[in-house]
Image 1 (cartoon, rainbow, N blue to C red):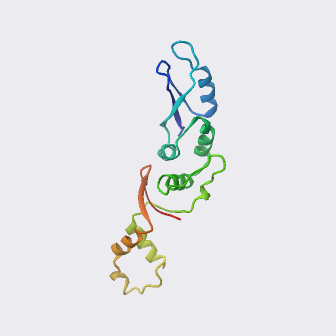
Image 2 (cartoon, rainbow, N blue to C red; image 1 turned 135 degrees about the vertical axis):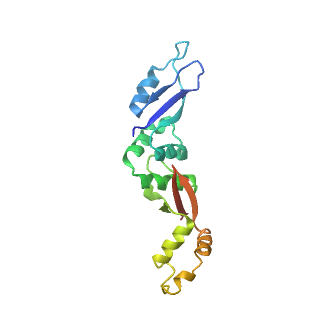
Image 3 (cartoon, rainbow, N blue to C red; image 1 turned 120 degrees about the vertical axis):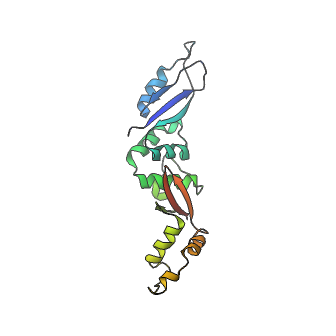
Length: 169
């Protein structure tokens, strides 16, 4: 899906424009004039259309004119897991992101997509995180209690309609 943004001028006597990449923005911004024929200097950038994950990325990071090219590059080249890691790291864990040097691997965030804390508790039991549990004892485990305990280190959120359990490192 193509990502579309809108440049809303701060000048109330000017009209904004839609754009799909940094080059299109630069060309249209240079040609923008207000009702008095003066050049428009400042715009607010708004996310209009695109993948929901890209909309969440725009909200988490903010899309500013100097960072338009970096935003579009991120949208085009990063996969959804990398975008989710960045959104959770910045939006939920409070990490900072540098558009110039930042990479999704920079963050110590564990993501479990499509899960609740109870689902995570079940997975941890199945994976042996709590050690070997004999089959005859497994039905007696209180997975809700385990999920509550996991809630001390893990949290749940929703990003672009996706349910995520995460842990900030």
